[in-house]
Image 1 (cartoon, rainbow, N blue to C red):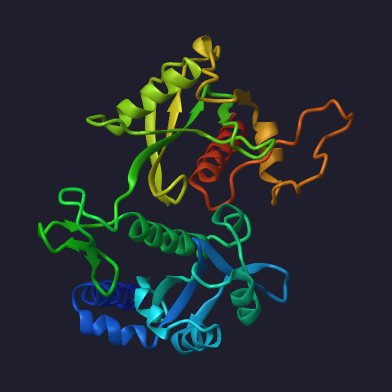
Image 2: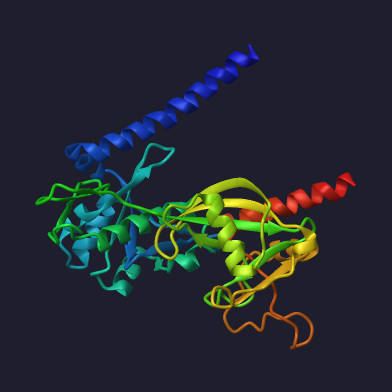
Length: 345
């Protein structure tokens, strides 16, 4: 009886997911159905690719999910043509079966929109440290789609303007008939370990004190294993000998990347770093104790905060990518494995 109940529950959950995915697929293909769905949808606003966030009573932030009628009222109040709503791009469908769109209102005055909505447009990099795990991917997907439309207005073969469909899932050149779809750049991110320590690096563009796993774009014709080995060799002068896959993630920086996460091992006898400073500002081995302490840092240091331990000459506090970033996931997985290994000794 218990197995039967579990099977029925699984079937209902699967059916709900399948129905949502099929519904989104139909909206991408049916112009009239997509237009009708937009009239009763959730719309997430962006201003020049920065999402609109609202502060909750608990002091946290969440994306502003506005009703279509609310957006229409805002556009009219600020003197904009309400047909701007038709430029909304389909993001997906929530678990509550609410269709979700995003819209960039960059042509409107930012302060005026913020005042009307009671929120703030915050850069996506900062928003990633303010949002929870389910919300960050949502605004990342929205920004990625909006950016793609802003940079894909012309056909690369003919130079003619491309036209989007209602859902915003594709653009077509009327002259050549070529159909363009949103793309992502494949990137490998790898956490290297020598058995006792893990290797983290930082780029000069990182905030002070922040380190993460090594990452690099896949070159044409490479497998992800080849990319991983090449990047580690180029950036820190190490040769990996064991690789295991962890997970993947869409990452909106610098534009739209598909991150594939791995763990890799190097020999403790050949762990001397030779950092390529044209690629990285710094790279270092970190102990389990150092990583455990860094994982306790919940928010990035504030601007102007000395962010130092002990004497003024001490280095900045080590902190890591946001919790929902795949770099943080790799580091957390390594930490948990190390702890299990210590308990087994």
